Structure formats: structure tokens, C-alpha cells
Image 1: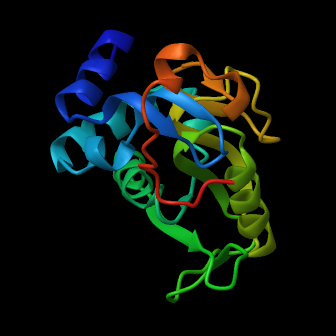
Image 2: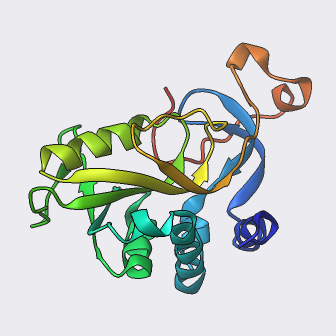
Length: 194
């Protein structure tokens, strides 16, 4: 998939929003990406996962034994990546604030794992998910996401393969451009702002 085709999928599902948004980080943006919307169509989710899987070099892709994603945002794309790669998919969640495998999910010692997210911005939740996977006995050999919002600077400690990089500017509350300052901010995400 070409970048224009990928962005067309986001626009068609109304996942790429424009306005004034308060991000989970506490920063503001004129753009917001709601990956849950792009993934709610199973066929679209399948196409995007297949395209993401193709970003991973063949020799690395063939080593992957399991896909693990962080809940909530990574669950659907993680499942679809498991389908695209022909391996089991599971997720880690935070029942007490720290990621862990639950629901009978388990890794065999040394399982080679692909960690999959919907969006990576700072990489904090990805690194926490990788720590939980390793604590459960898995070996994370790569990470993937639909979107890299880090500006290409995120370091997850493993090779990282995003489907697309979107680098919309973000602003501290005291740096807002006049057009954003003139409109109230909307908090569309799933986590409270910092």
C-alpha cells in the first residue's frame, strides 16, 4: 500500500480528524488519529494489517511465532497481524497499572514475538508491553504499528516497522497558534490527559 492509499483508508473511515484536540500527553494538535475507527471495518483492518506485515523483512517475518499487543488500542490490529502472519495473537493488559498476560494467555520460554500497537507516539506503552512480554518468557524480535507519530525518533530497543509515519505538529498549552487558541479543545482519546 502506498502512503496515499493508507491515508485514504483513514479519511474514508473518519479516523483522521481535524480541529483542536487535547492529546493524552497534555499537548494540543490540529489533527487527531482515531485508529479504532479505521479498524472497525474488518476488511479494512485486514488490509492494513497485511500491508503492515509486508513492511517487516521476510527473514524476520518468518521467525515470528506470536503476536502480542497492548490492550486496548492494539487488540484489533494485533489480532489482524496474527492472521496476516499465520500465528497466534494475544494481548497484555493493565489490571493493576502494569501490563501482564491474563485470560489464560501464555508464552513458551523463548517464543519469538512481534509486539504490535495501533499508534506509537512516545513509545512508553510499547516499551512497557515489551517488558511484560519478556517477563512472561517471550523474546520480542520486532515491533510494528499502524502509525508512527514519534517523528521517526522512537527507540523501542527492537526493529520497528510502522505502516505510515504521520508527523502533525503538537503544541504546549502556552504555545498554541492563534487559530487553535480561538477554539475549545476536544479530548477524544481513551486516556486522561497528563
